Image (cartoon, rainbow, N blue to C red; front, side):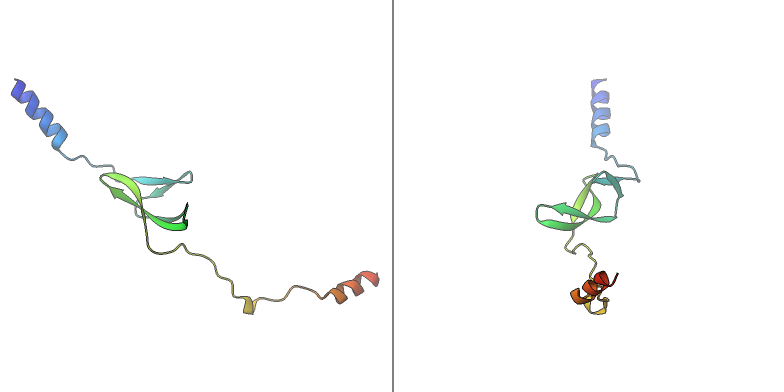
Length: 94
């Protein structure tokens, strides 16, 4: 009887268990699906991280790629500043 209990306990604890299919990572109060990436604020600046599974638990894996940023090309931007002489004339004309 003891041998049967020990065998059952051994089998129960030695068989791998798997997490569910809908695992998520948490960051900044949001659920991020496994396989998705996000930019995370770290002590070394913003880093791209991917939600992955490590030893049957979700975990963040930091990637080599940088976080995407918006770049603005100044050469095509209209100049909205008005010269001081024009604004002074429009105030005194009234």
